Length: 474
Ligand SMILES: Cc1cc2nc3c(=O)[nH]c(=O)nc-3n(C[C@H](O)[C@H](O)[C@H](O)COP(=O)(O)OP(=O)(O)OC[C@H]3O[C@@H](n4cnc5c(N)ncnc54)[C@H](O)[C@@H]3O)c2cc1C
Image (cartoon, rainbow, N blue to C red; front, side, top):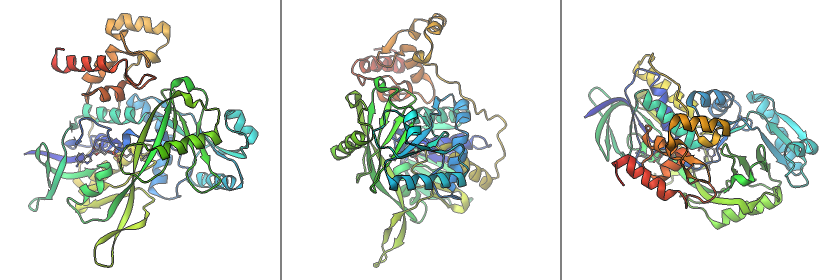
């Protein structure tokens, strides 16, 4: 039986950053992911915003992590070679109720230590975002809000963890965990065999409550809810310059618009009942209606995609009248990190927004606790740096010629015309560790297939390159 110091369960943002954080210490680490690739759960479908920490409760774990994460995000992305846009955000109100919410957030943000926030009058808002609908009252400008591609970040963290010696096992579902009575630790049963670990970090996303209960008493249950998004083509780029949060005048969810690092505009999410990644008409119609009120000129004819997301809402469990466990009505508002086994079993249960922003902080937090529990020293060989992948489409035209001369013909053979992705970029995505094994995996790593035609032109060729790289023949 293979022995590890720590097994991380789940290859989403939290699991990948936990594995990276653990390798800062002298610990033998493995990450088990049940799917064929990493970043396939909640981390795959979200709003991609790096939050500043201006609207969470002062003194909470969430707030302290969010404020420090946002202020250090450019450095983290620099280390991991990940694209990051510090575009800032404007929260806009169209009436008295919204104005009050914005003033409260300004106070909350100041108390939390968020930098550079300021209230804008309507003129100031239109100067920054001229395409907003008429009738804006007030804006709250927050310079420390940004946006990042969640796939880039998650895969970069995993690659850096792997380069530092963490083992990543895909297609490995954890099915059972039992405490070892003599000497401590855990026997972890998976679809790929049985392993031993002295400690476990459970980052199983939507299944984190059930994984926690494999070895501990039930404390928190996840209640799912769903959301819908639209994506606009890069033709719409420039229509907004900041992340825009709309504070509605009636209670309910407003509109969020995000100018992504790829030049698309993300619209959403809604909040509705649901527990899977399907979109629903009712949600998409709601987004269209909100757009018609908040930014009617947004070119909705450039929609290239819609997608669904699932939220893991954590609810405390209490005993019902007949002794059964029932969930509390109110969901836990702070990050929920459960500890059992004298600190050797840590579970992230129901980490929602701003979990993407705080993934590095949460991963480091769990790693530090685990290292302390195991008395592990610092790993002097840990290297936090990851070389970025070069995207041909990001290079200026005069540099492209030199680049392709130096890197051979595959570096200028374009496979995805919409995004300008070259054959060499696709081969690189397959051969890097952890590499893509599916067309979808290539898309997440390179953007091939995520443009205007949504892969109708390039997916067959991507499939051929995958087969060639994996099996050596077509
Ligand atoms: C709609 C929505 C929008 C959001 N927007 C933002 C945002 O803009 N900014 C922000 O900061 N945060 C945002 N978040 C929060 C952020 O996306 C999450 O906190 C984060 O992605 C959670 O990642 P995770 O690693 O916990 O879960 P996941 O990404 O779901 O990873 C869990 C992994 O565990 C695997 N797994 C499950 N069971 C097992 C098992 N038994 N064995 C092995 N593997 C298993 C799954 O396959 C999955 O890959 C948003 C969340 C939602 C839902």
